[in-house]
Amino acid sequence: MADFLGMMKQAAQLQSKMQEMQAELGNIEVEGISGGGLVAVRMSAKMDVKGIKIDPSLLKPEEAEILEDLLVTAHGDARRKAEAAMQEKMQAITGKLGLPPGFGFG
Image (cartoon, rainbow, N blue to C red; front, top):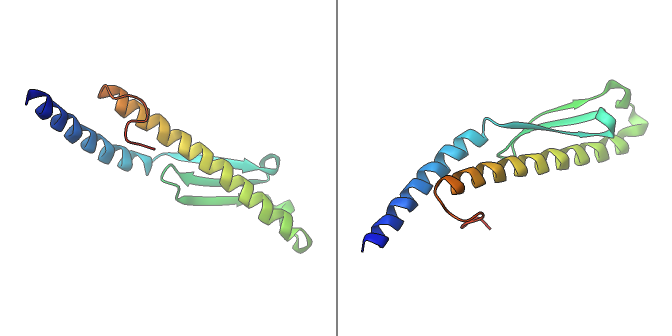
């Protein structure tokens, strides 16, 4: 019975830490870059795009397709960085609770 109560307490701690982490993820920002810095996408670790910067040299109608491709690439770069930040936070939480890496998270 003590093991069950310990597991319940650990589950409650995990839930509390997860809620804290979700709040923190909204404050973490990463920036994805493409085209050697010509395009940048800034997003939160919760995958919300916060801003896009485009070098003025790309704002030519005949280069619209290139710009579109660079935006997709920059967004992908930012998303990978946001996912890495989220994984880092998850590992910190599960490590503090003595859980194995990836416990219950995919």
